[in-house]
Image (cartoon, rainbow, N blue to C red; front, side, top):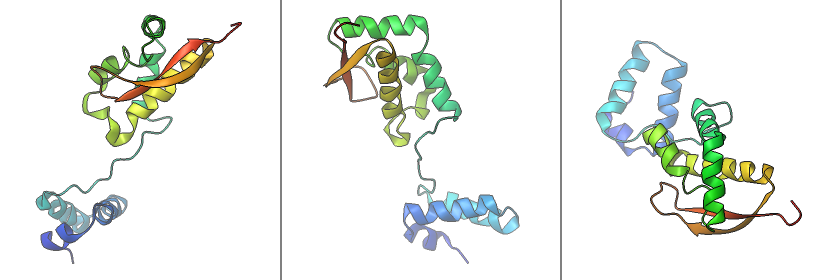
Amino acid sequence: MYTVEKLKAMTLEERDTVYRNCLRNPGPKADEILLLLEKTGEKYIKDKPVANGDPIYRAIELIINKPEHTDLMLDATAKSRPALEPIDPLIANALGKDYGGHNETTILAGYLVGQRMYALGYEKRPAKTLTGCVAKTAATFRKKKGA
């Protein structure tokens, strides 16, 4: 049987496994273990990257693909700034704690901005440090020659 002390001594991965097993096998015993996990005061759910099809993924996609946001990306690019820079605060505002490095949504946002820029005929350039953003760095872009 689990105790608070036993659960505290476990790694995050081990507590996450216990938590997920409780969700797969609901009942009074699972409920008791979930309460013990809460009482430890320790983290017991591993953050996982957001995958395609997840509502957070879709929300980021919708923000990036708005026509007025494309204009912001192109304006930043014209100023030799990362295309993500004006978009990151919009995503952070919309998603709050669901946006950050803990679930790799900042990486996802950079990837989706890159996909948008490639579709518009731009090529990737070196990354720069972002200002006023959750993401730390992002690629810059330039129009492809002949595009």
